[in-house]
Image (tube, rainbow, N blue to C red; front, side, top):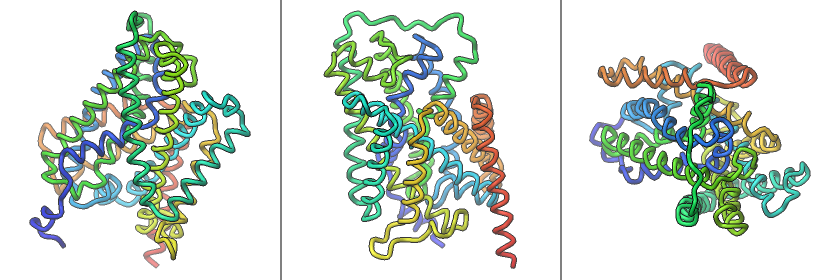
Length: 422
């Protein structure tokens, strides 16, 4: 076992690098879709939702800061929950992570096809959708089976282009919109519309939990984690607010457009602006998918090696050393879900899985006897848990899927414990 000094010497991730992890993990392709969904719920009051969403996520992020300071090794919330609440909840957390990644991938693939239709109108048809989805997934699967270095480099490059394009959208909108449409919160909207809109932002802000994965390598975690999460989420909150603000200022029909940011750019920058935002969306979706083909198969392999997933998924290719079975599993999941068309259904399922995942991790934090919480820490934990419950607004079918996953985890753990006992 490492001594305290040895463990400290192995910690190499500082606050700037960790802030970059937060920003890259959170700002995904969802920002290209959610402005339309949020506008559909609260109309011209949409920018205010991002302010509410930021403050709603703050206590949950605070709980994750506390969890991060208690993790001595890499592995994130999965290993932490497993050590505190046992195998059933550990397996459930692992499966919810996969649900989040899978449904997010479905949303991203849907966005890829919709923004591609700006250049190829036939892309919205089923035949073109099948060709686009299978082609992209096959290339990413083959590339990452042959080796992950190219995937990592491509993901990093596309992330920079994604952030630059969104910054250009905000800057161009601010400079070119001479008569911005007012931002007005409707007075007759029911509270349920606001709550639903804020709950959708769990999807937009989701991903900050990935900061826990390298927690064992973070320098001075009690200082670095709060700084990275606070500054990272603060920057993201401002970024999201400005994107929605400019889209609302444009007066574009965000509510009915399959490509809301392209539609907004068309208002103040013409056809070239719409084309530029569509290219940015295609780049962003490809960058996100490229990153998941690097990270998710590794997660599947890790859970398989611990006995929480099918053993075959833990195998590596004899020649390339990559988790080829896990890559094939992930590719199949992305293809099946990506060929669906209901973006909002997948967003809601992802939100439900995230909130349950956050809740389980927070309960583990509150029950951690090895690292007792201060009064402020317990208040933060209970506040985060209460907000997870308050924001849990999903359909009955999605709730049934998530309940079935927990049931599967319990049965899987029971069978595994009996097999070990023999």
